[in-house]
Amino acid sequence: MTWGWTGVRGTWSTPAAVDSMRRMAEHAVNWTAIAYAAVQATAQSTEVPFREAPTVTDDEVVWAIREARSHGLRVCLKPVVNVADGTWRAYIGFFDQDVPGEPSWGEWFASYREFILHAARLAEAEGCEMLCIGCEMVRADAREADWRALVADVREVYSGLVTYNCDKYQEDRLGWWDAVDVISSSGYYPIDRWEAELDRIEAVVAASGKPFVFMEAGCPSRTGSADRPNDWARPGDPSGAEQLRYYEAMFAACDARSWMRGFVLWDWPPVLYDEADAASNDDYCVYGKPAGAYVASGFRARVGA
Image (tube, rainbow, N blue to C red):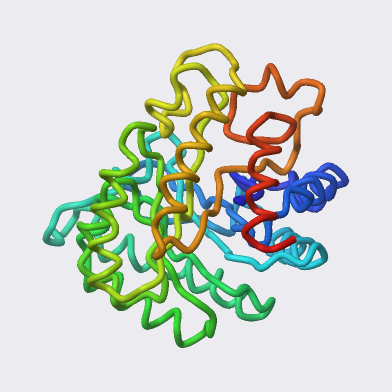
C-alpha cells in the first residue's frame, strides 16, 4: 500500500499519522511505498526544490520509515516530483536538444539527480528494501542516457532494489528496463481491459527477465470509476460497490499471471477520514469500505497470515 501522499510537511510524525499507519498495517499489508513530493514551479522549471515546504522534512521521512518498520513492513521509498500549477508531472519536458538561453533537460536532470540521490542516501541509511527513482515521467522516459546515468549514480550510494514507476500503457515503450532491478508501472486500467493489457505487459516481462509489480493500482469508490480508474476527478456518486467490483476484477486477472509479483495499492493518506464516514468518501483509500475487507482477506491469503 502507498502511504503518506502527497507528503505535505507537518502531516507526518503526528498522532493522526501514527493511527493511519497502524490501521493500514491491520489490512495485512507487508510492503509500503512511503511516497512524498518535491514541487517545482512549472513543467518547464529546472529546479526541484526538495528541501523546501511543502515537501516533508528528512526527519519526517525517517519517522515514516521507522514507523512502518515497527509494524513489520518492508519499505519502498518513493520520492516524486509534482508541479505547483497542477500540471501532471508526465508533461515535464524541454527541447530535445539543449538550446542556450532556454530551460533544458540537462539542467533539470542535474536538479532531479540531487533530489533522488538525497532520497537514496536516506533509503540506504534506514535500510529500505527498495527505492523508486521516478514516477510517470512520460516525456522524460525517452531520455535513456540520463536515466541510465542516474541509476548508476544511485547504485553508488544505495544497495537495495531500484525500480522506476512508468505510467500506464508505457511498459513496452521504455528502452532501459535492464538498468533497474524491478519493472513497475501504474496499473490504472479500465475494468474490461485487464486481459489485453496484461498480455502486452507479459511480453515485456518475458523479454526483460525482470520481476514486475504494479507500483500503483486502485480505483476510487465512485460510480463510473471502474471504467477510468486513473481519473481521480471523474464525477460520480460515492460507491463502495464500484470500487469492490474493480478490485475483484483486477485481482482475478492478475492472479492468473505467474509472473505478477504484487501490488502497491493506491493509496492510504497520513490523515484518515473517520470510519463512520467511509460510505460517503469517494477517494482511492479502501479504509472502512467493502474493498478494504476484500484487500485484507486477499493479502492474508497471499502471505499466509
